[in-house]
Image 1 (cartoon, protein in one colour):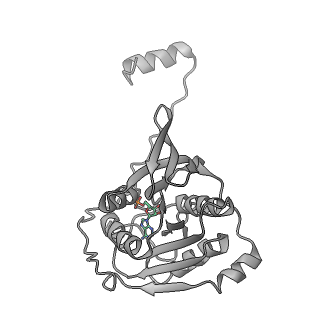
Image 2 (cartoon, rainbow, N blue to C red):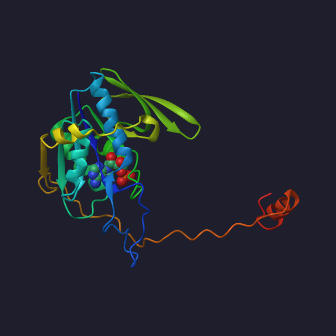
Image 3 (cartoon, rainbow, N blue to C red):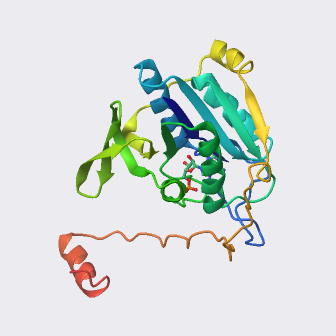
Length: 249
Ligand code: AMP
């Protein structure tokens, strides 16, 4: 089985995102970018399946500017066998990403597609679900554990009250949640080896996909500053404040 994993180049999770001064979006100039953390988990899971003999090949796909090649090299240093960059400098919204991935799935015929549950920059949490819809495939979102059999896939999903177990028919789409695994550190020799792995570049028009945006970002703004706290002298004062000021009890 071939596994296709979608890896997005996103703002590094240690960086505090700030809106541009004109509110037209998030400031990305001179900001550290890395692989979206949930996509690292997705790649790690694919590698573990390959190590367990359940997958033969791992294909990492990234969509965006030429710099996404770095993200693909990281995926390959972790263990992906090859990469495809769908190169564009245009904004690519989740539906367009899903359509581009659909076109690559039709070409590459993977048995399983793993994505992150969400990209930490736009927090859309849409791409995997849209891709499964476009392909007409089963989907297991927010995956906390995978068990791949020959024709089926058992997915334990993170839901509000605990874990839900689904049995999906392969091929399927899975989105990785935080507890699925802990991604490995990339070792230096593997970074060197990854430089030699195949990385193909295609454009959205070569895949026959129209990526024009469907949504318009109206405004990006900082969240309202948190009001300062108040010290209370004793429990009586706390209860009085909760009852009379906050009116929560
Ligand atoms: P989102 O729906 O934007 O929250 O993204 C969910 C997942 O879709 C991410 O964790 C990635 O696996 C995948 N994805 C979204 N955008 C891209 C992109 N530009 N390139 C590669 N994968 C992407």
